[in-house]
Length: 140
Image (cartoon, rainbow, N blue to C red; front, side, top):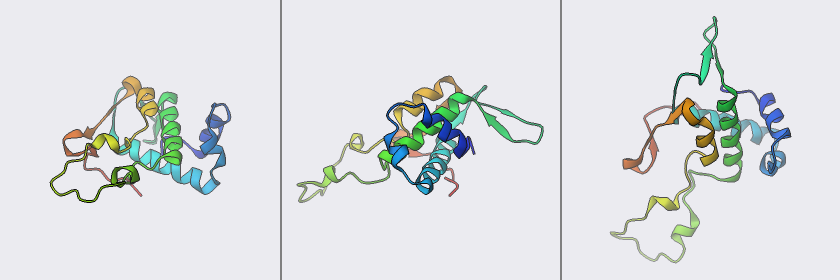
């Protein structure tokens, strides 16, 4: 795990506009953090400085990476990037032979999380296959 639930609570105690986090149940917060961790782990190739490895082999991630994790968890509490957008189907009677632009689908990773990663990680998303992540388990 990139960061703990306790670290997330400390982060959101000082973050402006964290209403979705504050309104979520403890179970939802833990689920959001777990899912965000799985998504970042599957979608990001870490670079030098993203984490250190202790003598026991455990990784300790940089604060910047933890902040990206917390922002991704907040994003997941607000948006379901796996949900097919209702707006796309409104008024559609037939879609035979039609192509829908994937821009209508929410990004898998929160834009602010990607920005926070900066030089510590590279997002690995296969744009040619509709933005699917590389073949990696999400660890659920």
